[in-house]
Amino acid sequence: AHAPLVAHGPYRFVRHPNYVVVVLEIAVLPMVFGAWPIAVAFSILNALALYVRIKAENQALAARSA
Image (tube, rainbow, N blue to C red; front, side):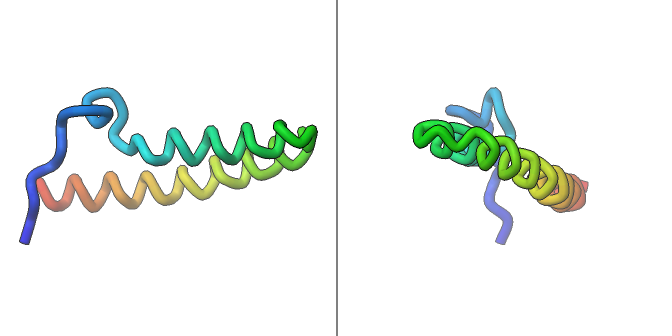
């Protein structure tokens, strides 16, 4: 069962709005405690993971609409 893609709300601006929140959490929370190196390291690791994940999700969505 294929549900239609959501194209309103935050999805109008960002295809994966939850990832924006996750990126902010990973970057900001360690900085609240003064842990800048952890914020930088985990942000880099998260960026790499999101690159792979978003690429796979976009391919799956493209295949679904083809």
